Image (cartoon, rainbow, N blue to C red; front, side):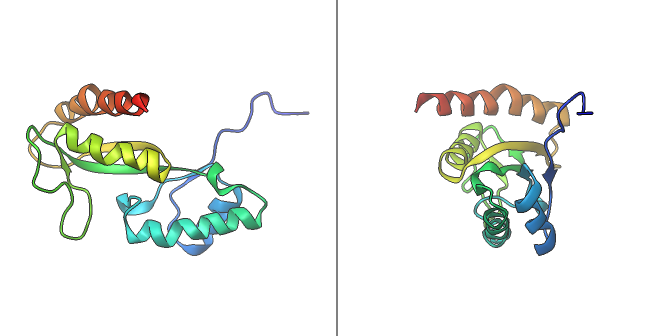
Amino acid sequence: MPAAVSAPPVWTGAVGPKSLAVTGKLADGWIPGHAADWLSPRFAESRPVIDQAAVDAGRDPAEIATIYNFPGRITEKPLSSPRDDEGRWVGGSPGQWVEELVPAVREHGAAGFIYFPVEDGTTTDGALGRWGNEVVPAIREELARN
C-alpha cells in the first residue's frame, strides 16, 4: 500500500568523501559544513564529489540544491572588506550582503541561505530583524530585476 504522503526531501551536511558521494547519489540537497560558501576550498573540493556521484547514479547534479549557512554581522555602515584575510565572510552593511548573495544565486546556483547572527553585541532579535526586514527584501528585489 503506498504511503499517504510523499517522502520529505533529504538534505545532508556531508563533509567526508563517502557521505558526499551518498549525497550525490540520493539526496535532494546539501548544506556545506563549517559555514563554507561557494568561494571556499571546502566547496571547491566537495561539490565535484557530489556531482560525480550524481552522474554515476544517472542524476543531474543541478537537481541537488545547495543552501549555505551564513554567519555574519549586519552593520550600519559598509565594512572595508566583508571577508577576512582567509576569504571567509564576516558580514557588512545590508548593501554588502546583497552584493555578495545575489551573485551567489545567479552565478553559483545558491538555492538559499540560513542566516545566523554572530556575537558582536547586537541582540539576536535585532540581527534577525535586520536580516528579515532589510537584507532579504533587498535580495529578492534585486533578483526580481533581472
